[in-house]
Amino acid sequence: WDKLFQRLVAYKKQHKSTNVPQYYKEDPKLAIWVRCQRAHCTNKELSVDRINCLDSIRFVWDPLDKQWMEMYQRLVAYKKQHESTTVPQRYAADPQLGIWVSEQRRYYNNKQLSTERTNLLESIGFVW
Image (cartoon, rainbow, N blue to C red; front, side, top):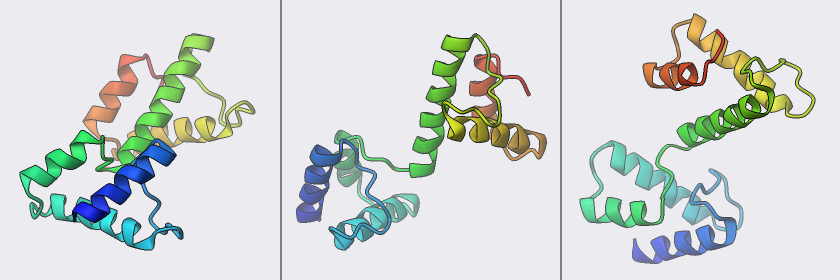
């Protein structure tokens, strides 16, 4: 465990993130180990010491949540610049943001958006 943790620390130093790709060709064992740590934590099979150790390097426990928050921050920046959260679906400056905003509306309308995410979007005046 300690050796792989040190490899993760080295990965973070190089890539500025602990979010190792699922299929990381340079170190497949590290990619598998990272997935296992997430699974062990979810299944309550990871000791508090190991959780704290991973937390100390800002381990990404839920990569999908991290990705959502990154997109949310891009929307916050868009609002700051444009004074609106109404991003065109085909927004040339950031096509991914336009698609993401559209998806959030669809998830909300289909009752698939968590209360936490709904509240975050509403806190910046998101237009449904």
